[in-house]
Image (cartoon, rainbow, N blue to C red; front, side, top):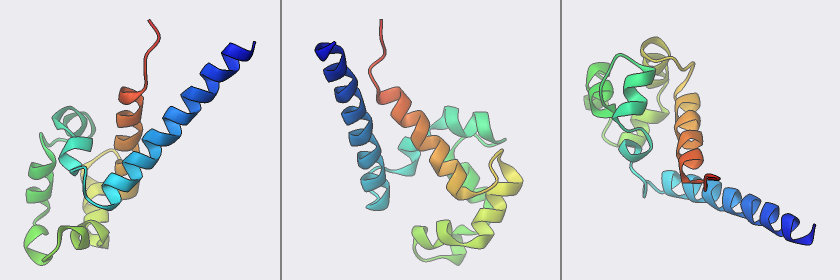
Length: 109
């Protein structure tokens, strides 16, 4: 029983580490959104093929000097709501992070 608890604890530690890593990297822009939202993710949740295509179609890129300002804008949030399956940019990022974390977790064989 002791050994099983250690494995469970280690799995939670791994999950917590992955969650912290995703938050830290995305907050500091160390993990590009293109990495968290690859083609397959964008294609399965919108009519676009890449995040770059999604951004270009928004027509909002030129309005913001800094990309993070674009992502924080209500216009971007509205574009995401109208052109993806997500109700907001936050929800889209959250889903991408969840998929990333699931992919990184060890899978039992």
